[in-house]
Amino acid sequence: MTVPLKKNGRIKELLIFVRIKNKVYFNFNKDEENLEFFENYYLLNKKDIVPDYKTSDFKKNLTAKFLAKSSSLYCETRYYDYSYLSSDGGVTFVRTSFQICGSKPLHYIPTVDDGGADNRDYGGGSFDYPEPAVKEEMDCEDAKIPSEIATNISKGTKYTVAKIAIIGMNNGVENGVVFGNVNGNLEITGVQTGGSSSIENLTSSFSDPVADLHNHPNSNPPSPGDFYSLINARNNHSNYNTRYVITQDGTTYALIVTDPSAMNIFLQNYPPSIILDANGKHVNFPNELLQEWSELRNSFSLSGALAFILNKYNSGIALTKMDSAGNFRAINIPTTQNADGTTNYAFTLCPN
Amino acid sequence: MKNLVKHLTMISIFIFNFSCAQTTMRSVADAKKIDVNKNEFIGKPLSFLLSKMNVEIKSTLPAPNKNRNEINRITFRFINDYEYRKNSSKQIKDRPTQLTVVFNQNWDFNGIVCKNTDPNCNNWTKEDEKNLGGLIVYDIYVLGKE
Image (tube, rainbow over all chains, first blue to last red; front, side, top):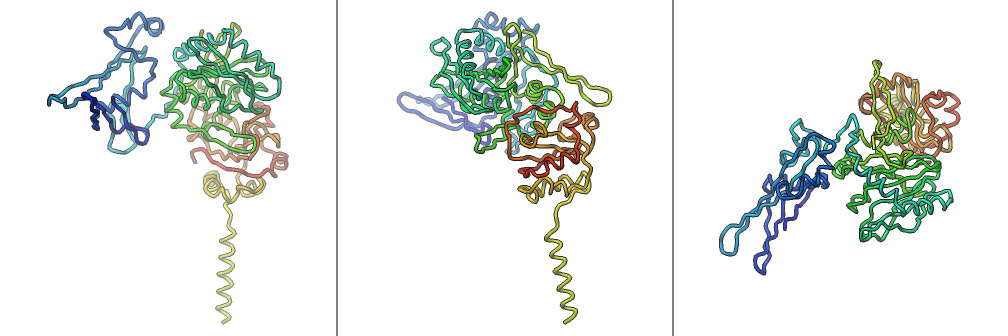
């Protein structure tokens, strides 16, 4: 067994346990390639990892996921090697690997450490770790599968029951439920009541919560607070990927996790601003992002502002909106630049 | 003795003036000084800060609006809204300087968001100064290139 040891958010060394007969031995390993293996593993989107390229029914399993939407498939295998002295005095070598495939070329971390400074070379120049990426255009493909999951849940009976119960509260505040996977069946908690503009910490006893739903007693789309608390929920439960919000006028949105690794890099780069007062906890973007978000709310659209920020700063979460057919589609905000430097923003929904 | 008294008086006046010195914004570049010395303004009415800003405010961004009971923050800009929007492709830190004042209310931004198509939203008037001047400053931050 190997335990990566982290310091300042980076894997610095590996603690390796080896059982030989009835004794357990341990040692430390700082091999750069091995550290890189774990760095990559933790940064990767786990859903893209495939068990074994050669032996699994990899093509059959992944064709729908990757090949159907792209003519190219890029795969790479990463290895983790270590050795230990056996009881007979010989050396035993152990190799572990994982493979990742995607429709785009893969980007790995080529070097592990630079001796303590917090700058790393990712092959294209150095910058503070982790990279505060800025994206120009949304890739609708990234949101396709989690959007489908959000749609599927919303078309089930439990969602309908939850929605009716929440709307039926009609108490002028936020009310919500959590959806959980119980032996393959979707179950819901009872309705939980929050405040007039937030509902903190929707809770459940589910071991595998997968989504939640709450109302906004106004026409506001999901807030930055909704976004940050989904990050928190996702980091506590690996299948917690969806947060539905129903507004007073019936418009329904869902925040969906599209890339957990990017989500946590975003969280490190843009931790929330939290204000506590008599009315509770208020969670928002840090000032710089809040400024951009406010500007877009003022000049463009409320939901468009959030969707734009989440995509531009590669937050790993997308804002979707339910269309007239009941399908959740990611909100995509393409921009065009005018000759005078001003920007035109367009509100579009990704294809189903 | 006369000279000693004279010198002490002059030193006292100098010390008094120095200790009462307040940060004043005489140019856009001075906005950073307001940020650095924000403690001089936090806890005091917005009108006090405005009295120290000797640079014309040409546009504002209130959030969510200018309602005295709903405004959580207001950004003052020293160029008009159109000139500011010409920089929209740049990162916030590379855009023209803007000074934001935060008030301790409505942290969830409830209320109708005023739109920049409404001149009452983005212009700064004497009426606004009168209406919002009594709000107590909770925080100040400055973003932008200068």
